[in-house]
Image (cartoon, rainbow over all chains, first blue to last red; front, side, top):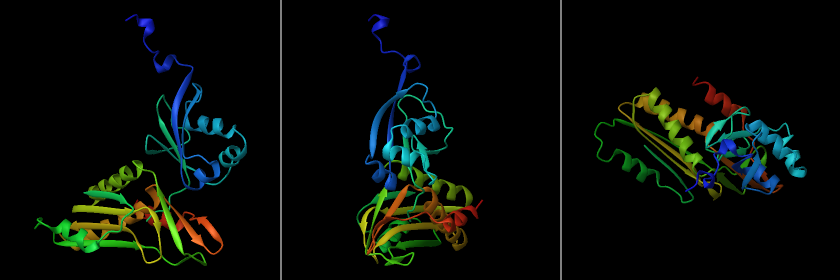
Length: 100
Length: 149
């Protein structure tokens, strides 16, 4: 197989594919529970992803510009706005938890 | 150690019997059961729906048990948490901690509940006469979890 036939490494891609999940009030407000999205390679932190989603307008802008507390998980571990993102990551946004 | 997230109800006696069966080192078992109340924040609650993050929830509960085990010399810990639609008087959550003596069992049981309330990804939505509403996180729960630091 010719090396040029191989899929490029993610570092050579101009975009990153992420799975993004939304829960509870956020899922309802956005009308979306899970989506697979391709974002520009420059979207390499949670904060950059939040800004990318905020730019969609409507409910997306309202929720991602809101001062309501939002929790973040990356690959099912609690994360922060400055957490780095890479190809294939699973990112979740949700309100503070209320189980128990 | 056992963690279960399920829509079905659970039998506390059966769960405790399962934990003590065949383990003669256990000298004490402490348990906590959380129930659906018929009112919250001045409103009547006729039902609630519990949502969770499949995968992360189990992982978070296992991590909480690991933290409890690193703090206290406990023999076994089990958590059962229900999801889906529940009604007043229904059981929501069960925590069972087995140890050699009561001290560590009581403490670890309370710790697990305090951490579960603030760290495990579950969300409650209540049905009230005023309509459905998402339950807001309480600062008193954050304070309860922080006192273990």
